[in-house]
Amino acid sequence: MSFEAITTYVQQNADIAKIISAYLPLSESHKALRGKCPFHNDQGNSLMVSPQKNIFRCFGCGKDGGPVEFLSEIEQMPRAEVVKKLAEKLKFQHTNITV
Image 1 (cartoon, helix red, strand yellow):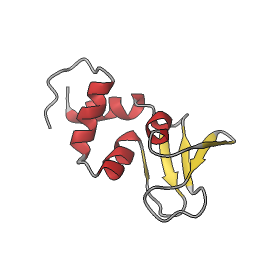
Image 2 (cartoon, rainbow, N blue to C red):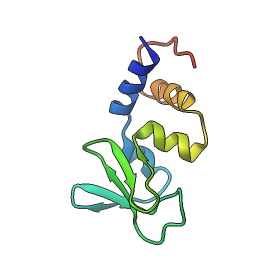
Image 3 (spheres, rainbow, N blue to C red):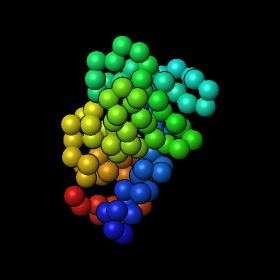
């Protein structure tokens, strides 16, 4: 299986709300969750998390993406390492994941 296919699987199956809430508190706001963006000096709740779409977006600094992008940015890890780490947590069937 290609790295891109594994990345797609991880992006679709890693729970972004659970991942982000491990780093900062989130509160419910309509169909989304909101919190203070960890990527800039956020004075409000500029970070929006959509559990339905499994994405985040900051309306203050413009950062956005899925679980891989959030973890890569906050942990300062290469994208490939994040994909491997999440695939292992999701108990992805292909054990030969190389980065």
